Image (cartoon, rainbow over all chains, first blue to last red):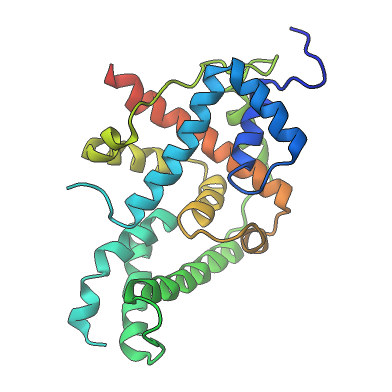
Length: 67
Length: 183
């Protein structure tokens, strides 16, 4: 599949989604990511999973989970 | 600070240390040292909560252990290649996911389930050591990029690559072992 320069692959999108947990993405990065996520359920799920994992690790660490 | 008051924090401190160190004996040792240091110390100012104060002491003890380990057995150069291979295997040559990440549904449903915690513990244990270390310094200890880079002697770009790989492998393991079995 041939992509134009603006389109991200899932692999590239996953890199940015992970980095978004470390730093504020640039305007261009955010635009490219938004376009990719509109069309890609897999990466949209990946983004939700990153939030899931971060939330779980903190609550697990703090013992803040239901008995 | 008396011993009884401190004892109630032991389970929390143990979980914290075990997440970071992945070695029950080592975790028990640093927690013991932390509680002893807290009993001795007059450093508690009352400005922070006891839990925050104890966590601060524990973090220092954990970092001491990690530094000692790094001196005693430096991580091999081959690690980067095998980590790259494991993470790259999740994508096809054209950059598409080989298996598209699934919808995990309502997080609370998993958080409530004790079996999920066991699956998570297992997935955290099998993560390659170097990646697990970067991941837990970030997510458990919540250190800044700069602090982690200093501890691991890597650049921010290296660190982001490591965290990305750690997250990819962790989510892959959770999806297969937990979400894959659920339906």
